Image (cartoon, rainbow, N blue to C red):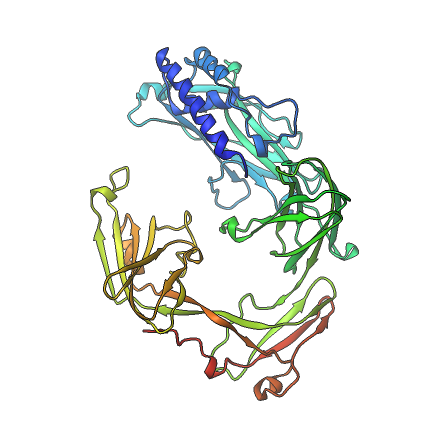
Length: 536
């Protein structure tokens, strides 16, 4: 994303000028009023390639927003904090009103009409006048410009949570491209106020591929700078990766593009399922890359000509899905095994494989030598005054070989905003209490160089409940070290060959769709054991 470093300060400065004018004219201000004024007076340019994904409600118009305040100040109570809109799927056993909009993206969501329940609740400031709350009532007209959305036309909003139902029928929509609309609620007694609330709706019917097309999608595009092209494709079941092949059709110029792949998985941050690449194509040049995908989910490919690369350009691209992968999601080997077997299956097209196994990192768990739960001082309280606690864990370890190390708490440091703890901090010290470095969530971002010697790690976990922290008093610390040279193991086609070490190795091997083969791996030789760098 480019341009936010300029647009955000511009918006903040403009809004500050508007607030100053409101105070000078003694016009009451509230966050909800300010938001309504800005959203309902924003301007969408009539020319240019703009979409709700890039422009939202439009460009800020401070003069129009100020006039909105002057004309509509009596229609929005200053005690009204916001209008909370939540959505739940109607056919769920237990309604879960957590979504703020409707986003239909996966193939199963586009096969038939779907019903949703929209909850609307005005929320007032604490200690607001009860008489104002009791008398609050608005007759709202519900409108939507999309024919695939069915909804009631009238809704009465009162000081309580009230609901209305809508139906979305995506079955007749164009495939592979996004469709955006929104439900807007207008005050029947003052339509000039603009939408009182909005329900954004995005519907995507993904393209599908099968064996008749050899799981291939090919497109030829004419791209302009900074104007993205989006394609949504249903990844076939059994697919493990997709290959992208881009070819420039320009005979003269060097062109630059951005290729961005994205999938959405339940309860997983998108940083774990996206792939971003800057592509530079010489005249008539080609670029190839492969990206891991999850079968049965929608894949978004966003291609855009870099904003610095001026002029139009013609480019052709091919997407090819492949389905070769181990049956097991994770391969786990024990040092006591005489041999380990895993199977590889091919699902989509004929593939030739050359399997290999190599170890690049050594990970060793360390148990805490000391744990202590403490209440924190006033400076560490939440803004609402709630007491917060910390769990302080102490780990001791010896490093027998210097190098780059990473420190992780399994099941915790993989998350940031999703983590139930409000703070995770790892600090590394020498035995003489000299500070070396620190780590936190996403530990692969924090590389700490350690020399040979004794060290201590202090880990702080914070939460508002000390009973919750009790669960983590024995949490192991994972110390991860990159090996100086990867340890590679041979893969054999038979059990006897793997155990004796004299059998036929599995090198180039062809697999037809639906075929699987067994792979046998001997254990790591003792002289290559990797648990020699950290001694507890």
